[in-house]
Length: 119
Image (cartoon, rainbow, N blue to C red; front, side, top):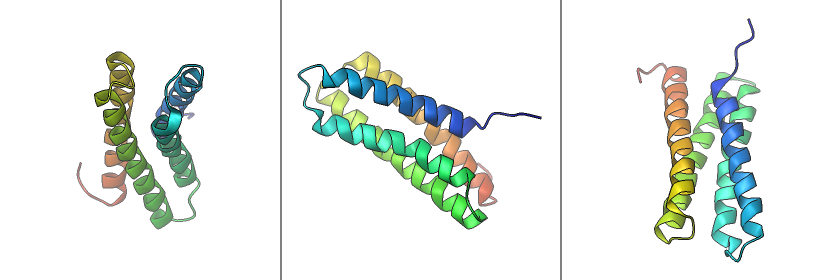
């Protein structure tokens, strides 16, 4: 049975979307300093989830998923800041925020399940 890993699929898609957005912004006059923060944290979600899937123990898995969760929260922070400073338009910001919120929910479920908690 070949099932897709939801967190890997969604975090990769979100990271790719952020990367393409960042590359687009490089061609505009937007200061990329803050945008690079989103690029870093937004792509780190998937990288840490990928590491978690290859973890050597349950403890290592939980640790990597917690880091992915923290990166998602950081990404949400930077997106809010960029949106509220009107560096990013409302529509793309809302799309990125939706992705981020979905990843946070998935990661919360994974962490609660891995720790034996009810979500």
